[in-house]
Image 1 (tube, rainbow, N blue to C red):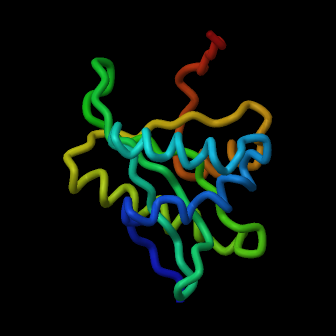
Image 2 (tube, rainbow, N blue to C red):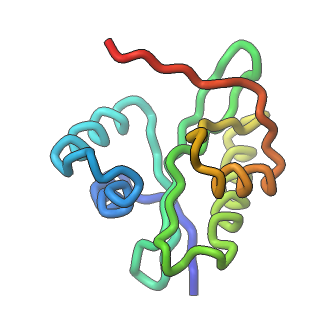
Image 3 (spheres, rainbow, N blue to C red):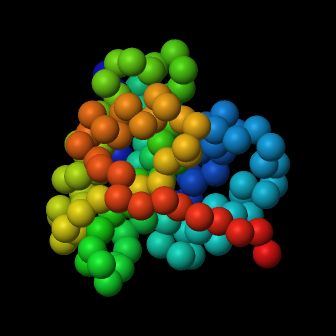
Length: 139
């Protein structure tokens, strides 16, 4: 049975194996440091579990921006490959939408890598619209 719930901040490092699948170039030590900082800045993570096995994650930020108001930002969703195409991502998003509404969010917005066409398709099925480009500059 698949369950979806927030991952306790004390267990946040349990998501590192899934994050390593998303980006193999970031060391485990760096991920631990960044997650520690992110928790201090309000980061949360929802997990999908098959019994006690963590099979999917999606980071969450609740933010307020002048152009949209209070909203939730799903971040770095990852479902283990052997569990993909089973609607787990959609179930996680339904959970996230309910969580957002319970926290008085009026919208959801996210970033998605340009070359991740499978993710584009997923987010379009979730009724997200492309409204902007995300730019980044190394300092």
